[in-house]
Amino acid sequence: MSNTTVVAARALAAVVALLFMLAAPAAMAAPPCRTGGSYEAWLAAFEREAATKGISQAAITTAAPSLTYDQRIVNIDRGQRVFAQTFLEFSGRMASGYRIQHGGALIKKVRRRICAH
Image: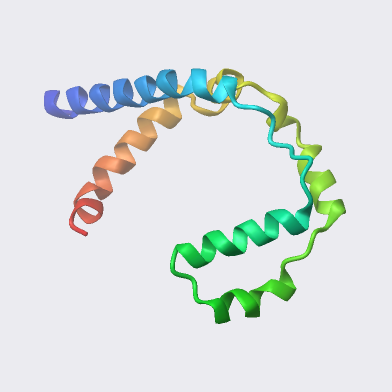
């Protein structure tokens, strides 16, 4: 591995670590992802947001019947222990040194394709 590659990999790892550190306070301060509002109110707001982002009313109307609240799925989702972890617990377990190094290598490998568009 050339010195340039090592320096680039270390710089990328430092940037990723910095991003994790900057995101940590906000993530730890974030309230739990639970709401007391109704599904219908959420769906209406979601449809309005879709329309403001350029989704046609025809597409929204066509998709709406398929958007249903399923308490079983919500229970399964809320039962996932990973969501009870703090950001630092999660990132410490999921963002290992290998993942950061391997991710940096993959970014370097595809950088030209990503930046060309």
